[in-house]
Length: 150
Image (cartoon, rainbow, N blue to C red; front, side, top):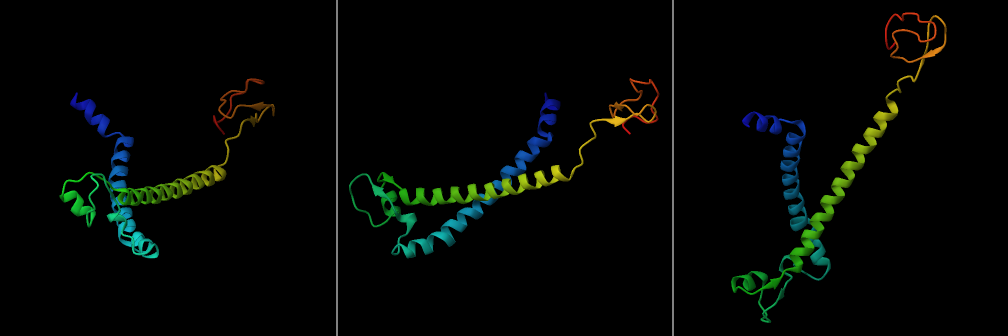
């Protein structure tokens, strides 16, 4: 069982997934900081000094001075400002992933265009009839070919 587990963990795709998750977590932290510290303050300023992290609806009907005060009082709240920030985080991550995947697809397409296609057939050097490039003997004249595939 330990051997099977080791084989499972050492598979390339499992290791790739682990690396992807770690990089994704780091990337998420960068995006969160970008949204909270760089993007949202100017947007809030343009919208009249709105602090998105402090936008909420108190469900108990009491008007609190801030979200933190409502949470300290144990009031149930709908934190729609935090949801807006999370939505913006998601959209930025989705855009970044889209751009990365688009770039990878373009590179793959360029590689496929550059790779020469294997010949579908070749001429027998003796009878000049078309044969498979993998043939070691001509099916028409039965000549032995010098090298298979070439």
